[in-house]
Length: 407
Image (cartoon, rainbow, N blue to C red; front, side, top):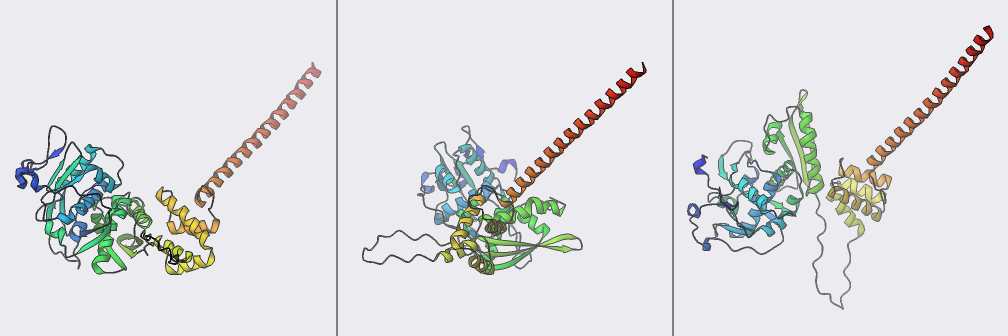
């Protein structure tokens, strides 16, 4: 797109504007009413958008999902959609209300070219299409966002043949765009094939394209694994509704293909709806604690056999206490190993009341031992130096006595 074709411009007040004549939206009747604050649920995101090549930050990816979700009921009806900045920040769980940052994200979305259908379902090329993520973007001084999608894109996202059900609460939980991109792709693969578990195999270059990386990035696989692959899988397992295992497939000595074993986690029990109690009715039976523990363990990625072994080995309240500890540490990003491994180790060592993880405690013990060894060595050296000094003084005194006797 040349400089003369750019639609978004920056007005004197610093907010993104677009000439309405380009959109045939000359009056306020073309702008949809500001939607009410409704809880976020699931976004039906079209597969071409998920498989698209788009160079967006994590915040912009999350924001685009929110814009799609809020506009979805009026797609194809209202050419321009409206959302308050305060509601957008609330949906994104974004504490700041800096309009300038929101404006910059809108501008990035407006200027982003999306290349759709990077991967064919049957492994062959089918078609290629490019479009802008947004056709129109505007943020007003009183904190109102207005945006529109390209007309040729609306039928694809309104009535897609293939789509994924994305939980927006999970989408907001990610801290890495690599993990976010891979999670969307894995959910799309499960939903399209209507599976609860499947194996996804792709070449290393295909994985890099999916993660919006250059195929020449991280030429050494160990660097790619350390900085991208391992953190990505760890984050998906910790924060999402999926459990993912990685298999590195070698050709000779080099890793050229990556296999992913992807399965849905067993969902946690939803809280019961609040209802007026019938004074004559019996109190409802609460689910057995063991069943709740099983569901929580499954949510963390434990398999059925491991769950039954842990439930039979430890009391339920003891397991629940350690799951609470694990959840808190996951929220703080304090677990740098496998979450399931942390829980198993914690159950073995009993972390209740402990302020550190077993690994942290082991490191602290090693530091204390090293300090004690160094102190002991310093004390021993001081004693030896004192002894050497005493012997030297005694020798000097004897020499002085002999010299005195000779004179």
